[in-house]
Length: 390
Image 1: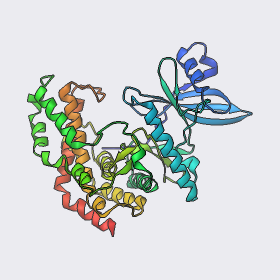
Image 2: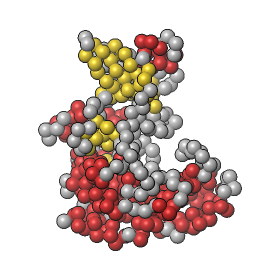
Image 3: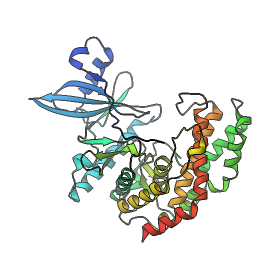
Image 4: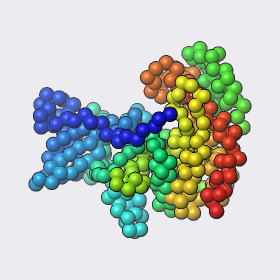
Protein backbone atom coordinates (compact mmCIF):
# COMPACT_ATOMS: atom_id res chain seq x y z
CA UNK A 1 0.00 0.00 0.00
CA UNK A 2 1.27 3.46 -0.89
CA UNK A 3 1.12 5.38 2.36
CA UNK A 4 1.76 9.09 1.89
CA UNK A 5 2.63 11.63 4.53
CA UNK A 6 0.32 14.56 4.81
CA UNK A 7 -0.30 17.44 7.11
CA UNK A 8 -3.67 16.94 8.73
CA UNK A 9 -4.62 20.58 8.41
CA UNK A 10 -7.83 21.02 6.43
CA UNK A 11 -7.66 24.06 4.22
CA UNK A 12 -11.20 25.33 4.75
CA UNK A 13 -10.85 28.94 5.82
CA UNK A 14 -13.53 30.98 7.56
CA UNK A 15 -13.03 34.71 8.07
CA UNK A 16 -14.95 35.73 11.17
CA UNK A 17 -15.05 39.43 10.31
CA UNK A 18 -16.73 38.68 6.99
CA UNK A 19 -19.10 35.86 7.93
CA UNK A 20 -19.88 36.63 11.55
CA UNK A 21 -23.31 38.13 10.80
CA UNK A 22 -24.36 35.57 8.17
CA UNK A 23 -23.17 32.32 9.73
CA UNK A 24 -24.68 31.76 13.22
CA UNK A 25 -22.33 28.87 13.92
CA UNK A 26 -19.23 30.99 13.38
CA UNK A 27 -20.76 33.83 15.41
CA UNK A 28 -21.44 31.41 18.26
CA UNK A 29 -17.87 30.09 18.13
CA UNK A 30 -16.53 33.61 18.32
CA UNK A 31 -18.59 34.20 21.47
CA UNK A 32 -17.36 30.95 23.00
CA UNK A 33 -13.73 31.70 22.20
CA UNK A 34 -14.03 35.05 23.95
CA UNK A 35 -14.77 33.14 27.19
CA UNK A 36 -11.11 32.04 27.32
CA UNK A 37 -8.12 33.94 28.66
CA UNK A 38 -6.49 34.62 25.31
CA UNK A 39 -5.02 37.79 23.87
CA UNK A 40 -6.17 39.79 20.88
CA UNK A 41 -9.16 39.88 18.55
CA UNK A 42 -10.26 36.72 16.75
CA UNK A 43 -9.64 37.20 13.03
CA UNK A 44 -9.82 33.67 11.68
CA UNK A 45 -11.29 30.26 12.49
CA UNK A 46 -10.39 27.18 10.45
CA UNK A 47 -11.57 23.60 10.59
CA UNK A 48 -8.52 21.59 11.60
CA UNK A 49 -7.32 18.01 11.82
CA UNK A 50 -8.62 14.58 10.91
CA UNK A 51 -9.99 13.41 14.28
CA UNK A 52 -13.30 11.57 14.50
CA UNK A 53 -14.27 12.29 18.12
CA UNK A 54 -13.93 15.98 18.96
CA UNK A 55 -14.58 18.89 16.61
CA UNK A 56 -11.36 20.86 16.26
CA UNK A 57 -10.60 24.32 14.87
CA UNK A 58 -7.56 26.53 14.65
CA UNK A 59 -8.07 30.09 15.82
CA UNK A 60 -5.97 33.14 14.98
CA UNK A 61 -5.99 36.39 16.93
CA UNK A 62 -4.28 39.71 16.41
CA UNK A 63 -3.21 42.23 19.06
CA UNK A 64 -1.03 45.27 18.31
CA UNK A 65 -0.07 43.69 15.02
CA UNK A 66 1.05 40.43 16.67
CA UNK A 67 -0.64 37.21 15.55
CA UNK A 68 -1.26 34.25 17.85
CA UNK A 69 -2.76 30.85 17.10
CA UNK A 70 -4.78 28.46 19.25
CA UNK A 71 -6.54 25.10 19.05
CA UNK A 72 -10.24 25.28 19.93
CA UNK A 73 -12.14 22.03 20.50
CA UNK A 74 -15.69 21.02 21.18
CA UNK A 75 -15.50 17.96 23.46
CA UNK A 76 -17.63 15.02 22.42
CA UNK A 77 -19.78 14.59 25.51
CA UNK A 78 -21.43 11.44 24.17
CA UNK A 79 -18.06 9.67 24.36
CA UNK A 80 -16.71 11.60 27.38
CA UNK A 81 -19.67 12.14 29.65
CA UNK A 82 -17.79 13.32 32.75
CA UNK A 83 -15.99 16.37 31.38
CA UNK A 84 -14.90 17.55 34.84
CA UNK A 85 -12.86 14.38 35.40
CA UNK A 86 -11.63 14.33 31.82
CA UNK A 87 -10.27 17.87 32.06
CA UNK A 88 -8.88 17.28 35.54
CA UNK A 89 -6.76 14.45 34.10
CA UNK A 90 -5.55 16.55 31.18
CA UNK A 91 -4.86 19.68 33.24
CA UNK A 92 -2.86 17.85 35.89
CA UNK A 93 -0.91 15.66 33.46
CA UNK A 94 0.03 18.52 31.15
CA UNK A 95 1.12 20.71 34.08
CA UNK A 96 3.29 17.85 35.37
CA UNK A 97 4.80 17.26 31.93
CA UNK A 98 5.64 20.93 31.50
CA UNK A 99 7.46 21.00 34.83
CA UNK A 100 9.43 17.85 33.98
CA UNK A 101 10.36 19.08 30.52
CA UNK A 102 11.48 22.46 31.85
CA UNK A 103 13.58 20.78 34.56
CA UNK A 104 15.33 18.73 31.86
CA UNK A 105 16.13 21.83 29.83
CA UNK A 106 13.43 21.28 27.20
CA UNK A 107 10.88 23.69 25.79
CA UNK A 108 7.53 23.03 27.48
CA UNK A 109 5.76 25.46 25.15
CA UNK A 110 6.51 23.11 22.23
CA UNK A 111 6.90 19.73 23.90
CA UNK A 112 3.68 19.59 25.94
CA UNK A 113 0.11 20.76 25.63
CA UNK A 114 -1.06 23.63 27.83
CA UNK A 115 -4.69 24.03 28.86
CA UNK A 116 -5.82 27.65 28.50
CA UNK A 117 -8.26 28.53 31.30
CA UNK A 118 -11.48 30.40 30.85
CA UNK A 119 -11.66 33.96 32.12
CA UNK A 120 -13.18 32.68 35.35
CA UNK A 121 -10.33 30.18 35.85
CA UNK A 122 -11.97 26.95 34.68
CA UNK A 123 -10.36 24.35 32.43
CA UNK A 124 -13.22 24.35 29.93
CA UNK A 125 -16.31 26.35 28.99
CA UNK A 126 -19.85 24.96 29.07
CA UNK A 127 -22.35 27.01 27.08
CA UNK A 128 -26.10 27.36 27.50
CA UNK A 129 -26.70 24.34 25.26
CA UNK A 130 -24.44 22.15 27.44
CA UNK A 131 -21.71 22.12 24.80
CA UNK A 132 -18.23 21.82 26.31
CA UNK A 133 -15.19 23.58 24.84
CA UNK A 134 -11.47 23.90 25.59
CA UNK A 135 -8.43 25.67 24.17
CA UNK A 136 -4.69 25.05 23.82
CA UNK A 137 -1.92 27.19 22.32
CA UNK A 138 -1.24 26.06 18.76
CA UNK A 139 2.23 24.51 18.39
CA UNK A 140 3.82 26.02 15.30
CA UNK A 141 6.30 24.46 12.86
CA UNK A 142 4.96 21.00 13.64
CA UNK A 143 3.09 18.43 11.57
CA UNK A 144 0.95 15.39 12.24
CA UNK A 145 1.33 12.33 10.02
CA UNK A 146 -1.58 10.07 9.16
CA UNK A 147 0.58 7.27 7.77
CA UNK A 148 4.18 6.06 7.91
CA UNK A 149 6.11 7.30 4.89
CA UNK A 150 9.48 6.02 6.02
CA UNK A 151 10.65 3.91 8.99
CA UNK A 152 12.15 6.98 10.66
CA UNK A 153 8.65 8.43 11.11
CA UNK A 154 7.58 5.39 13.08
CA UNK A 155 10.80 5.35 15.08
CA UNK A 156 10.38 9.00 16.09
CA UNK A 157 6.78 8.43 17.18
CA UNK A 158 7.99 5.50 19.30
CA UNK A 159 10.65 7.64 20.98
CA UNK A 160 7.99 10.26 21.73
CA UNK A 161 5.54 7.79 23.26
CA UNK A 162 8.34 6.08 25.19
CA UNK A 163 9.50 9.45 26.50
CA UNK A 164 5.89 10.19 27.48
CA UNK A 165 6.03 7.05 29.63
CA UNK A 166 9.38 8.02 31.12
CA UNK A 167 8.33 11.57 31.98
CA UNK A 168 5.23 10.27 33.75
CA UNK A 169 6.85 7.26 35.42
CA UNK A 170 6.68 8.94 38.86
CA UNK A 171 3.28 10.56 38.37
CA UNK A 172 0.75 9.52 41.08
CA UNK A 173 -1.24 7.29 38.75
CA UNK A 174 -3.83 6.52 41.42
CA UNK A 175 -5.05 10.13 41.18
CA UNK A 176 -6.12 9.72 37.54
CA UNK A 177 -9.75 9.06 36.63
CA UNK A 178 -10.81 6.33 34.21
CA UNK A 179 -12.41 8.36 31.45
CA UNK A 180 -13.57 5.12 29.77
CA UNK A 181 -13.78 2.32 32.39
CA UNK A 182 -12.23 -1.05 31.43
CA UNK A 183 -11.08 0.38 28.12
CA UNK A 184 -8.44 -2.33 27.59
CA UNK A 185 -9.86 -5.02 29.86
CA UNK A 186 -9.71 -7.60 27.06
CA UNK A 187 -11.36 -10.35 29.12
CA UNK A 188 -14.44 -8.17 29.65
CA UNK A 189 -14.39 -7.20 25.98
CA UNK A 190 -14.50 -10.92 25.19
CA UNK A 191 -17.54 -11.39 27.44
CA UNK A 192 -19.30 -8.56 25.61
CA UNK A 193 -18.41 -10.19 22.29
CA UNK A 194 -19.86 -13.54 23.44
CA UNK A 195 -23.07 -11.80 24.48
CA UNK A 196 -23.30 -10.18 21.04
CA UNK A 197 -22.86 -13.56 19.36
CA UNK A 198 -25.58 -15.11 21.49
CA UNK A 199 -28.01 -12.22 20.98
CA UNK A 200 -27.28 -11.98 17.22
CA UNK A 201 -29.45 -8.86 17.13
CA UNK A 202 -29.02 -8.31 13.39
CA UNK A 203 -28.92 -11.91 12.22
CA UNK A 204 -25.31 -11.63 11.11
CA UNK A 205 -23.63 -14.36 13.16
CA UNK A 206 -24.14 -17.08 10.55
CA UNK A 207 -22.04 -15.26 7.97
CA UNK A 208 -19.08 -14.65 10.31
CA UNK A 209 -18.55 -18.10 11.78
CA UNK A 210 -14.83 -18.23 10.76
CA UNK A 211 -14.21 -14.94 12.56
CA UNK A 212 -16.12 -16.08 15.64
CA UNK A 213 -14.15 -19.32 15.69
CA UNK A 214 -10.86 -17.39 15.36
CA UNK A 215 -11.59 -15.57 18.61
CA UNK A 216 -12.99 -18.57 20.44
CA UNK A 217 -9.78 -20.49 19.73
CA UNK A 218 -7.82 -17.71 21.49
CA UNK A 219 -10.09 -17.22 24.49
CA UNK A 220 -7.33 -18.25 26.91
CA UNK A 221 -5.18 -15.31 25.78
CA UNK A 222 -7.76 -12.61 26.47
CA UNK A 223 -7.11 -12.24 30.20
CA UNK A 224 -3.36 -12.82 30.29
CA UNK A 225 -2.24 -9.21 30.88
CA UNK A 226 -5.07 -8.43 33.30
CA UNK A 227 -4.15 -11.53 35.31
CA UNK A 228 -0.46 -10.58 35.42
CA UNK A 229 -1.41 -7.12 36.63
CA UNK A 230 -3.66 -8.55 39.33
CA UNK A 231 -0.77 -10.76 40.43
CA UNK A 232 1.38 -7.59 40.68
CA UNK A 233 3.75 -8.81 37.97
CA UNK A 234 3.07 -5.73 35.84
CA UNK A 235 3.04 -2.15 37.17
CA UNK A 236 0.22 0.33 36.72
CA UNK A 237 1.32 3.22 34.50
CA UNK A 238 -0.02 6.48 33.14
CA UNK A 239 -1.02 5.39 29.66
CA UNK A 240 -2.12 7.33 26.59
CA UNK A 241 -4.38 4.59 25.18
CA UNK A 242 -4.54 5.99 21.63
CA UNK A 243 -0.96 5.75 20.40
CA UNK A 244 -1.56 6.28 16.70
CA UNK A 245 1.16 7.94 14.66
CA UNK A 246 -0.95 11.06 14.16
CA UNK A 247 -1.10 11.67 17.92
CA UNK A 248 2.54 12.74 17.90
CA UNK A 249 3.46 16.16 16.53
CA UNK A 250 6.70 16.04 14.53
CA UNK A 251 9.06 18.98 14.27
CA UNK A 252 8.65 20.28 10.72
CA UNK A 253 12.37 21.00 10.32
CA UNK A 254 14.06 18.06 12.04
CA UNK A 255 11.42 15.34 11.71
CA UNK A 256 11.89 14.51 15.41
CA UNK A 257 8.95 13.58 17.64
CA UNK A 258 8.01 16.77 19.43
CA UNK A 259 4.81 16.53 21.46
CA UNK A 260 2.25 13.84 22.33
CA UNK A 261 -1.28 15.13 21.79
CA UNK A 262 -4.91 13.97 22.14
CA UNK A 263 -4.85 13.20 25.85
CA UNK A 264 -8.55 12.42 26.31
CA UNK A 265 -7.85 8.76 27.07
CA UNK A 266 -4.92 9.33 29.43
CA UNK A 267 -5.68 7.14 32.42
CA UNK A 268 -4.26 4.27 34.49
CA UNK A 269 -3.21 1.26 32.40
CA UNK A 270 -0.37 -0.95 31.23
CA UNK A 271 2.57 0.19 29.10
CA UNK A 272 1.95 -2.88 26.93
CA UNK A 273 -1.38 -1.41 25.82
CA UNK A 274 0.30 1.70 24.42
CA UNK A 275 3.10 -0.23 22.74
CA UNK A 276 0.73 -2.81 21.30
CA UNK A 277 -1.80 -0.38 19.89
CA UNK A 278 0.93 1.61 18.15
CA UNK A 279 2.34 -1.51 16.49
CA UNK A 280 -1.14 -2.68 15.51
CA UNK A 281 -1.84 0.62 13.80
CA UNK A 282 1.51 1.51 12.29
CA UNK A 283 3.28 -1.74 11.38
CA UNK A 284 0.45 -3.21 9.32
CA UNK A 285 1.28 -3.37 5.60
CA UNK A 286 -2.37 -2.78 4.67
CA UNK A 287 -5.09 -0.27 5.47
CA UNK A 288 -7.13 -0.90 8.60
CA UNK A 289 -10.26 -1.54 6.52
CA UNK A 290 -8.66 -3.38 3.59
CA UNK A 291 -11.19 -5.47 1.68
CA UNK A 292 -8.57 -8.07 0.74
CA UNK A 293 -6.56 -9.55 3.59
CA UNK A 294 -3.96 -10.99 1.20
CA UNK A 295 -1.91 -7.82 1.64
CA UNK A 296 -2.08 -7.82 5.44
CA UNK A 297 1.12 -8.59 7.32
CA UNK A 298 3.33 -7.35 10.13
CA UNK A 299 6.16 -5.28 8.70
CA UNK A 300 9.07 -6.60 10.77
CA UNK A 301 11.31 -3.66 9.93
CA UNK A 302 8.72 -1.19 11.17
CA UNK A 303 8.20 -3.37 14.21
CA UNK A 304 11.96 -3.35 14.90
CA UNK A 305 12.06 0.43 14.50
CA UNK A 306 9.22 0.87 16.96
CA UNK A 307 10.78 -1.47 19.52
CA UNK A 308 14.09 0.39 19.31
CA UNK A 309 12.46 3.83 19.52
CA UNK A 310 10.09 2.92 22.34
CA UNK A 311 12.82 1.39 24.50
CA UNK A 312 15.05 4.40 23.87
CA UNK A 313 12.28 6.80 24.83
CA UNK A 314 11.44 4.83 27.96
CA UNK A 315 15.02 5.36 29.19
CA UNK A 316 15.22 2.06 31.04
CA UNK A 317 12.12 2.56 33.17
CA UNK A 318 10.31 -0.57 31.93
CA UNK A 319 10.58 -3.69 34.07
CA UNK A 320 11.97 -6.92 32.67
CA UNK A 321 8.46 -8.37 32.49
CA UNK A 322 7.23 -5.37 30.53
CA UNK A 323 10.06 -5.63 28.02
CA UNK A 324 9.64 -9.37 27.51
CA UNK A 325 5.87 -9.07 27.09
CA UNK A 326 5.91 -6.32 24.46
CA UNK A 327 5.04 -8.81 21.67
CA UNK A 328 2.10 -10.02 23.76
CA UNK A 329 0.88 -6.44 23.98
CA UNK A 330 1.07 -6.09 20.20
CA UNK A 331 -0.89 -9.27 19.53
CA UNK A 332 -3.45 -8.75 22.28
CA UNK A 333 -4.25 -5.17 21.22
CA UNK A 334 -4.68 -6.42 17.65
CA UNK A 335 -7.04 -9.18 18.77
CA UNK A 336 -8.94 -6.77 21.01
CA UNK A 337 -9.40 -4.23 18.24
CA UNK A 338 -10.60 -6.88 15.80
CA UNK A 339 -12.96 -8.22 18.45
CA UNK A 340 -14.43 -4.76 19.00
CA UNK A 341 -15.00 -4.33 15.25
CA UNK A 342 -16.67 -7.75 15.07
CA UNK A 343 -18.82 -7.06 18.12
CA UNK A 344 -19.99 -3.79 16.59
CA UNK A 345 -20.76 -5.51 13.30
CA UNK A 346 -22.88 -8.11 15.10
CA UNK A 347 -24.73 -5.33 16.96
CA UNK A 348 -25.50 -3.35 13.80
CA UNK A 349 -22.55 -0.93 13.52
CA UNK A 350 -23.64 1.29 16.40
CA UNK A 351 -20.25 2.40 17.77
CA UNK A 352 -17.64 2.70 15.02
CA UNK A 353 -18.53 5.05 12.20
CA UNK A 354 -18.82 3.29 8.83
CA UNK A 355 -18.84 4.68 5.30
CA UNK A 356 -19.84 1.51 3.47
CA UNK A 357 -21.53 -1.80 4.17
CA UNK A 358 -19.45 -4.41 5.99
CA UNK A 359 -16.67 -1.92 6.74
CA UNK A 360 -16.51 -3.08 10.35
CA UNK A 361 -16.33 -6.67 9.16
CA UNK A 362 -13.43 -5.76 6.86
CA UNK A 363 -11.74 -3.98 9.75
CA UNK A 364 -12.19 -7.08 11.90
CA UNK A 365 -10.78 -9.41 9.25
CA UNK A 366 -7.75 -7.17 8.76
CA UNK A 367 -6.95 -7.24 12.48
CA UNK A 368 -7.34 -11.01 12.67
CA UNK A 369 -5.10 -11.47 9.62
CA UNK A 370 -2.49 -9.27 11.28
CA UNK A 371 -2.72 -11.23 14.55
CA UNK A 372 -2.31 -14.49 12.63
CA UNK A 373 0.79 -13.10 10.91
CA UNK A 374 2.21 -12.11 14.29
CA UNK A 375 1.78 -15.71 15.39
CA UNK A 376 3.77 -16.86 12.36
CA UNK A 377 6.52 -14.33 13.14
CA UNK A 378 6.45 -14.77 16.92
CA UNK A 379 10.05 -15.95 17.37
CA UNK A 380 11.35 -13.04 15.30
CA UNK A 381 9.26 -10.56 17.30
CA UNK A 382 10.67 -11.90 20.57
CA UNK A 383 14.23 -11.96 19.23
CA UNK A 384 14.01 -8.29 18.25
CA UNK A 385 12.97 -7.42 21.80
CA UNK A 386 15.99 -9.29 23.16
CA UNK A 387 18.41 -7.59 20.76
CA UNK A 388 17.06 -4.10 21.41
CA UNK A 389 17.13 -4.67 25.19
CA UNK A 390 20.88 -5.31 25.26
